[in-house]
Every structure is written in structure tokens, then in C-alpha cells.
Image (cartoon, rainbow, N blue to C red; front, side, top):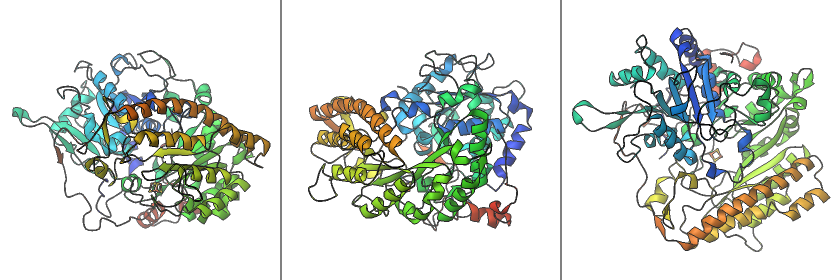
Length: 628
Ligand code: SF4
């Protein structure tokens, strides 16, 4: 199900609240004594199109944001472990400053959840007196926090707490726990006492296990939906985390030192940046609007330019990717950002000479911002990824008609911006339809013909955190076992047919590969070489090489999966997955019920109405902030 909304007017942390909690914690000497290991779980089976190759070159933004926030709050000794780089590191063998870290944070997406469970299980082998406080976060914990508990044959493996929100929730919880920490006591002990004293129940955004005395039934306590930090300029500058990254290796223990600062640019070829969050659309398969309480949050133009400048000057980073849901969501904001950034200089050079950036948007909004494209290029933008999904609007309508898409792509090509469409292959869509745009291959060819530089194709799977999640399970669409093997979370990556009513699911799996093949192939490469695009020839040729190499690996994987689908048997789920333990809401009334569709205002309006100040871009000091 979709995440519920907080009561209208109570969706956000008070403006300035993030900075204040950082300052309070940083003033507590006990924070400076703590150590933290922040792990990003990664299941290598998901290394397929469209992220193959790029995945190795991006240090995930979530674990960096957490580490930066801890740093701003005074916790300086931390280590980020990216499991793709260091797959064998075990919490039970990790030492920071010669001792087991006080906090173990495990961040995971749904598709990497199996690896996260293994990390929790390993951490639970650490003797009680040395065991770190085991916290879980990331999309898996936001939408299915219960899966971090009651693991193992007898349910004996448990995280201590799942964080179902962002950095502020973690800091809020740590502040409560520190109030319970006695001299020489471990942070985990303090957490358990705070939990048993019910002192965590008014920290929105937590789920933790309680085993009541007297053998009464164990249950999970859910403290409700987080309050969001509304004005993203309050977050710390994303610099400190880069000096805490574990280098790639095969050992089970941590390296004596993180990646040296001067080598970061070689490892982090692409740097993800939080620029905006939220989207005004309401696609049925997308959890983003509900997660963001239907809000649109963003950083100021000055702050975005500052971040790119600092990361370029300090670490030599050049390529940025915005973790936006829909960067072009609000035209005024886009205009202000690209206007400011196109005039900004780094070391005397125009910003676009020093850095490049790309992000995600919708065709509908790109069309509304079509006149801003020259400015976008001058601001350093080089590419936009679009959730086109289906050009005919059969599956979803969000203003992505074929002619509008062609117009946007043409203008982007003229201005040196790469159009990168993302498609969804759904039940009922044929591979090819003569004379119409409905077929998958027809759409892919249309996009290529009109200037697309890359393509992503995914098969529609039940999307966690949406109202589209339950029905495929209750309708018996979702596969439980295929050819005698359980269909685990890694298979829900959009590259595997795991939910369909089609009689021949193996054929649908092949459609995916043939759709990709219609885009990435030697003929397309030849065309890109013989008739180079005026401003995008390098990107066009390069993406064909990368796409064909990644398609080779993806095809092998699809061959195996389609063979299993063909061989069968396919056993289907009959119930919606859920918690093994009962869940108790700490504050059941803290949900918007009267106006469930009420849309809160966006960042700037909230900032202005609450602070009664002029726009930040008019020259007032930004309400910031703890620098990294
Ligand atoms: S347009 Fe994209 S981000 Fe917005 S709701 Fe739809 S799928 Fe989600």
C-alpha cells in the first residue's frame, strides 16, 4: 500500500530544525566518541542493463547523505562500505579504531535485500557486549521495514531498528538514545533502555521489535511517518563522506585507511547529488509522490552551484547526476536554477566548462520548459532521463504523446542535450505492430529515429509502496517459484518477468531483449558513425558500444530466465507479502484522514510563509548549515 500522509500542516520538520539538531548533537562530547559503519548492500545478480558499468562508478547518494549528516552532528569516525566494491566485508570482522563500531547502518533497496539480511545475520553473531546498534535504512526499510526482523529459521535474527525516513530521523533517534546512555555503556544498551522506556515512540519514522516480559507476543512498534526536512539547503554539504569510503578489495575486514582524497575522482566517475525531491504526477506504479507527502522539495540555485564547485575544487569531480524524481516539475524553479548556474564560474571558467550534470524529468514538463534548453546546456546539463513508459499512453498518461516526445527530443539534440527515454513493457503490449506505435519495437525505433541516445526497458512488476502492489498478488499474477526455485527480491529488478497474466511469460522475457536489440545493434552504431549527430556524436557512438556490451550480459541472463519460465512449473503467490510479527502503531491518530488528497505547498512557499522572509535567491543568507 501507499505510505499514509501526515496530518496537513504537520508534514515537515520546523525550518532550521535540521541545523539545530546537528548543532545540539555536535555539542555533546559523547557523539565525538562514537564510530559508525555505513554499509550499502548490493546483490551482484542485478548487474544488468541499464546500470551495468555505471553502477561501479557511482558511490550511492543515500549512504553518503547519512555519513555527511553524522559528520555534521559530530560523529567523525565512520566508514562507508559499498558492497559492490568490497563484497566480503563482514560486520563481525570490522573494526574502527581497534574496536567494533558503535553503530552499524545497513542501507538497501528491495532488489539487494537478500544481501542486507546476510549482513544483519552476521552482525547478530557478535557477542551482546560488543554488538553494535544495528540499524537498517534505504527504500527496503521505508516500504517494508518488517522484513528486517524475525529472520532465520526461528525468527532469532533481528535488526535493532529500521529507519523509515531520512537523515533527520536518525539524528532525532540518536539524540533520544544519548539521553539514556550512561558512562561506559554501549550505544546499543542505551537504545534498548530508551526503547523499553517507550522514549522512542514520539520519534516518527522508526520500526523496532519489542519482546514484552512474561512471554507475551513479540511485536513491532511503528512510530509513524517521518517529518520531512522541507528546505533541502539545510542538509550538509556532501563532502565529508568522500573521505570515508572503503576502497575496493576482497577481504572480510576493513582497510586501515579509506580511499585517499586524491583518488576519489578515479573511483567516483559519476557523483549523485540530491537536487530536488518529489513529483506532481500520480502514476499508479510509483511510490514517490506518497513518500514525499505530495510535496516538491529543492535546493536553491546558489547551493547547487556551491556543491558542484566545492566537489570539483576539492576532489576533482566533474560528472554529476541529480537524484531527482522530476527535476522539471516546477518551471519557476528550473528557470532560476539554470539561469543562475549558467552565469556561475568555477576558477574563472564558465560552470559548463568544468562540470557536467544530468537528471530525470518528464516529457510533459520538458515540453513546458522547451525554451529553456539553451540555458540548460549553458548551466552544465548534458542529459535528461525521461520516464516515457509507453508512447501511446495505454499504460499511463502523463503527457508523453509521440509527437510531443519527438519535438522535445529534436530540441534537445539541437542544444546538445542527450534524451534518455525509459520504457515499460506491460501485459498486452505486442513486440511489433504493423503500421502503429503500440508495439515495443515500434516505440523503441521511433525514439531512436527522433534522437534518443540510450534506452531503458523494464517489465512492469508490482511496485512496493504503491496501491498497485497488492492486486497483482491477490490476482495470482506474481510468481512464487519458477522451475522449483524461489523467486527472490533480486528478480524484481524490472529485468525479469515475475508477474504476468500472459500465457507464455518466456516470450515476454524475449520481448525485453529484442526491444533492447532494436536500439543497441551494429546497424545503429554504423548509422551513428556515418551520420553523426551534430552536437551529440560522441555520446551517441559511446552509448551504442556500452549498450551492446551490457546487452550481451543481459541476454545471457535472460536466456537462463526464459528457459526456466518455459520449463516451469510456475507457482504463483496467493497472498500479499507482509510482516511475520504483528505491528502496533505508536500513534495511530497521526495520519491525515480528513483530506487524504490535500497537497502541501512546495519548499519555497513553506519557507516564505513560515519564516516571513524574502526569497533566498533575492540575497538573504541561506538558512544553512553544517559544512562537511
Ligand atoms: S512521473 Fe515519474 S516520478 Fe512522477 S509519479 Fe510518475 S513515475 Fe513517479
